[in-house]
Length: 534
Ligand code: G4P
Image (tube, rainbow, N blue to C red):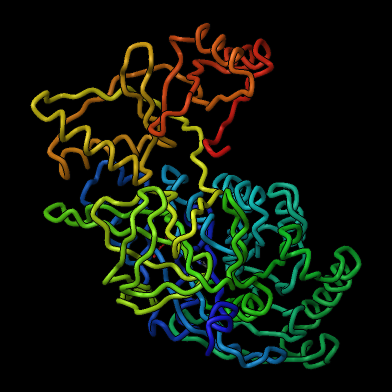
């Protein structure tokens, strides 16, 4: 197969959900279909449960698991009618379930070409789903929705569709439709394939279901009962009346989300989702760099780092830098340019991820994720190319939501503390600002758990001790202006509240929403950014 075919048969996506909606279960079932695993229960959830916040062993264990499950690749050849027999290479990127690691998830979303959102039929759209969808909308990522747990009593399917539309701000089009739910769940009519799958609860093996090509076939009444058969026909009529026919182009533009119903735990409705996914989900998409747009089929390799897993083994400074390949073919032992450092580097042991295995590869293609063993050369956002000066965009740092001063508790270990902080910030664990007024370091995070992780990792990986001191802050926002004078005037007026981020950019520390609004009003020539990419 030539390299363009290899790239075009790749599908790189993330499954996102509010914790407990069934992301891990669905991932596992997709891997079962791909033949990548053979029994359920093989994929470990990388969820850090709320109750485990002080259980460090748990966090460490989770870090171990999440390396193994960060990317799961597998091959899949569609079997249902209507799809050609081409085989697809699927890369599923795992996202941390815990909301305190939301930023990690946001960055992972920059490395995927589409997304599947899992929604719990009983709970509907939950907070975390809403936040993640905002990122998808911002990036115009194509989204498919899987409404899970139909084997339990849940909300009315039409209400769920309305909720998804209004809460997630995207138009929907059901492509499968459930026949009842909970104890009375009989199955799903596959609108996309025009077939009917009957529900047989089975948690362990992939089952074939009975099929009918026509919803009016009298056999359906016999199988699901007259009432449910009539209800299904009425529902389908209503769907056809209310929702426009599925438009693939609208999906690819991120305006329309096809919706599937099923039960991941029972492996029901998953195959339909996967078959439709491989047919409609986009192959690797162009990626914007500051200099130009990079097309995946360009022959020369380019890629960017979206995730770093550091110090899994504290005795060896072993890190893995995860790169998304944006174009061309990456080859082992070939020299590539590390743009930020201006250095040529080659990699003798790049890894790819097949199911849960990590293996050394000789080549990888646009759309793939490779893991490069690293000793501190990379930070998030770094670009590697075959030589061209390129800087990929789209890896924003979000304005943190919680802030604390970090203080050194062991003056003998200042060097270790600084080194540790620098590496943890490169890894994207949190953001650091240095207040220009008092020179104190402020750490900003999206959740309380990060502070605990930082303190623990500084001690165990760098031998440095820190303590936290409270600071009252509402938001940190990056400021800029074309008008140098206005910028200087602002900095002078707010000098107590000015800080620099690790890149040396100006950051305004607002201690309340009111202060921020007043500043925006009083200084119209200043632009206030809530993400650091501008
Ligand atoms: P997450 O990764 O999105 O956080 O969710 P996960 O897959 O871990 O699923 C959360 C819980 O929901 C699990 O139960 C899982 O078994 C259950 N679940 C997933 N899909 C379905 C479904 O289709 N129907 C029903 N009834 N339950 C489903 P748990 O008790 O938290 O974990 P476990 O003890 O079963 O592993």
